[in-house]
Length: 104
Image (cartoon, rainbow, N blue to C red):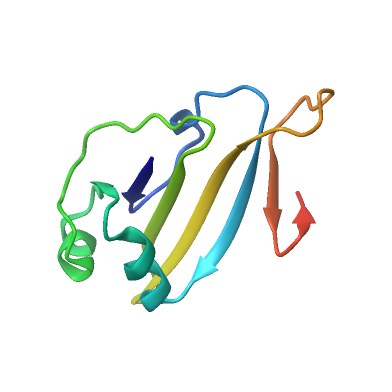
């Protein structure tokens, strides 16, 4: 499923072993991907700026979900996409975050 939020917390992720792929998006890419996503935007101003519903309900993500994030940074909206995927490493002991092909 696809979800939109204005913040992120590790408590959102239910899987124990998973990979996260993070992509920065343009506003146009965000709008094109987010049209059918479920809004969990917990900040009224960001909900209004993005034309998505305000919703402070907790969010639990599972493998296969896509999380779209709209956040204000220095007064401007920035957009990211996080893909929650199964870990391809059976020995993985902690979460891996991929940013521009770098693993952190």
